Length: 340
Image (cartoon, rainbow, N blue to C red; front, side, top):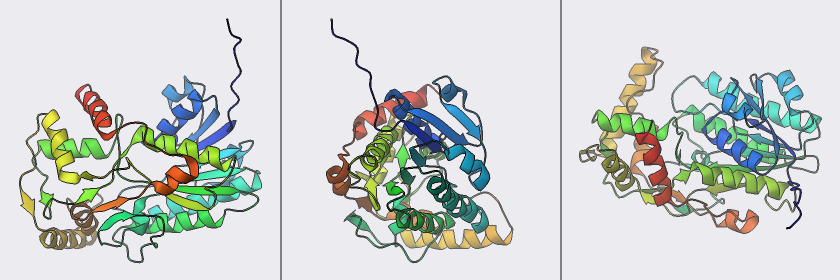
């Protein structure tokens, strides 16, 4: 009978901002399984994480004194918290995504944290043209159709510029994250599908990257481990996905078929959807409507254009390979959706 070996993780104490969110929670659970002592910063307490021994600190990342206290004693910080979405006030996006990130960097530097991993987005390079297998050499976008993308560009630049001898940093850009527990993409598609409110935008041939949530968490842990060892990924950004794009509308219709929802058959041209989005944005802003319009210019672009990326650099630099295939991920997601 062999002796039990003590597992000593490369990462010992980690703080996860946004650790109660969809991606954050997946990262926390993966870290805990690897023996990492985790603390979560969020807007609430999370009983399911607390039962796993995770400490939950309730606070706002725009409060630098709160963050200074939270980061103390950590060797690694995963900065996942962000204001997502494509509608809202610039000050809200700037406050959470830019000021919040600035506070995280400052707190890490003042508390001698060794590594900082940031969750970014491919939207930072989306320039309104098709992106076919693009890599990290793509330049940042210069023109933005939503505050989210603009604020994430600013934040990612800050993260990568902060990389140095005193703090090693890296940014990951997962695209269209989905899976069991998804509070955004899948429920929204299902709702619109059941109400027959979804129309194909464009000719329906566009290919896009999608990212199963466990694969995204896996990439985060691998990149953070790399920062704490060889640091090949320090100062760099990486795209994260399933490694193979899907036809967006075929993927949606496969999901709908499994959920007994009629397929998306009606279509609208890109130009029509774009003009409609422009008009709706004007009306909603003029009337100061808080909720997101049913169509925006950004959504029209995203639903009609191809946007998928190479993950070769992540493979080469920190060994990223998707753990869960798209087919398996869809099966797991459908089971979750049916049991909700």
